[in-house]
Image 1 (cartoon, rainbow, N blue to C red):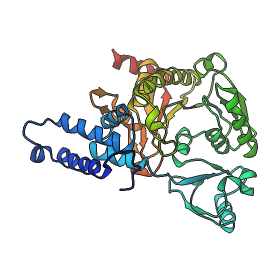
Image 2 (cartoon, rainbow, N blue to C red):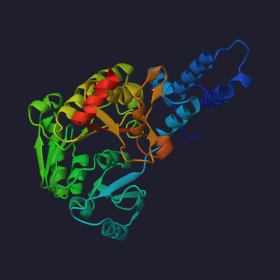
Image 3 (cartoon, helix red, strand yellow):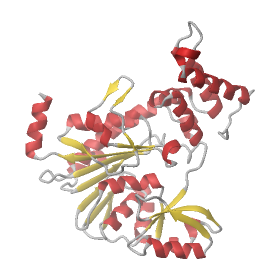
Length: 373
């Protein structure tokens, strides 16, 4: 196994105990020692995983509430391996076929990302810096992970619409929205921090986006600034527990308290996103994070279902895993299965969550009230 090892007097022995405990937990009745509870095996496994992979103990315990013991090991192991480099063709300036041919001539080895994307290319090897080619500088493509493109596909912005991205910097998803909108309609790119928008403006300019307005407001108060949007994308600030392969420091710095604090902010932001959608239309809100934590995902969406007249609809990403309808003692609305989860060990993509909400019509509101009663 090629997982990153931390300082441990005997990592081989630690890995041996991990495998032994996995074997027992997978066949508990047959292999467990008499009088030794399952919880004790899980505790030992958690301690060894913490030592072997270098996580805070509380993060290991959190992951063991989300994944089975064996899948938790697969998840942690995948976090020690890089995800593929992916670029998104900017169809405002070129076609994927033409871009691929040009990059191949420059010594870039690539292939189409997957059947679900008409614009993504996976870079398998390159003799030139992919982020500094003439084509990149001319705005023919954007470096953007496969998972990061999925919320925009779920949102499905169309030409002529009013679209808002509530936390837009550095503009990767906003620029994808613009190309699906064919540079028509109105795209509002909001972010709280003005300094973050330097990258947003630079990317939008490089990519030839001409239908965007950039602004800096607290997302929680955005409905008081403007509203009436057809679609709203909220890629919420999160712990990044799905992108550990990109930032190994998360292992030793993120805490359960961070998860709880961000979940509180996410709940405020998702209500603001819903309130920014046109009340007279069946407007759409897509909520996404790059975290695998239930508190930041299913909990937040359930909160929105409870507090606003919205329903979950199919996000249109069938290759992903269903979100949880139940997790431990938690129970969610049955429609939560329509939200999608992506995992590094399952899809070789960043850990991501995507949920698509739709505002209810007056008739649907009445039905929901009766069901709630």
